[in-house]
Image 1 (spheres, rainbow, N blue to C red):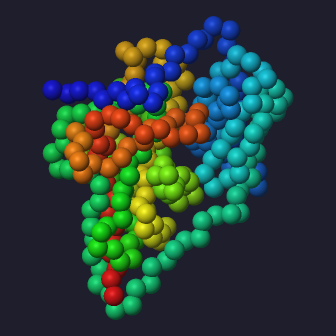
Image 2 (cartoon, helix red, strand yellow; image 1 turned 180 degrees about the vertical axis):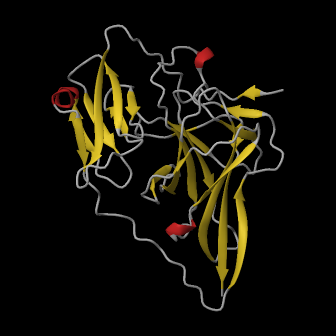
Image 3 (tube, helix red, strand yellow; image 1 turned 45 degrees about the vertical axis):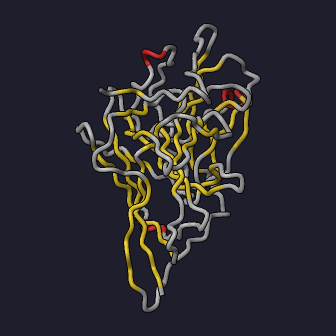
Length: 290
């Protein structure tokens, strides 16, 4: 029997009141090249609403107060804080590339033997548990550093999914681990978008990250999946939850399961989930030893 896993301890489904709201249209562009920035995040600083830009850089934001402050962000670019009033006067938002990019860590082994390993919980036969996309649209699973160590190079990210009625792109994050154990900043400061969905009920997505030549930190990483919801229809009830999938498969937690965290694009914090499931997210690594 298929069971939808609804993680409600940290958040509740966002109920939007559309009365009295206005729409604002704008475009997110690269300041230097004027190239549209797809899937940029637009969110209110003190309210729980926001939007994403589409593949042309266009966004439509519903708001009720012109005085609201808005943060516009995109991986690899400096975030911009502005107001609804400013956006109404100029629909073109220019983001500046961030010169403080993460230095790539290139593994140059000498006389070493290469071994690959699968980390995480990507099992061949998952239990029939589904994690739907709704107002909580970011899920992160902790992947610990292998016990037998060495130099670990991250190669690919995999996760199991099933399609829904509407299938939004998924942004994949590789996140640092903060000292308190929470998800931190992006290690790869480039947008990694997955939208090459197949129509099967139990498909595996695989995203190659070997080109970034990044070593795995010794305190582990978080792999986070972010649903980029381009459907601007407000979710006003639990019956509508999950329609902007795809669903991500999960398994029942065991003592060996890794911590899961949840967040939303309009939040600046992560909260640990008390759900009794572990998301089926895997990380393929290459181990170099002397």
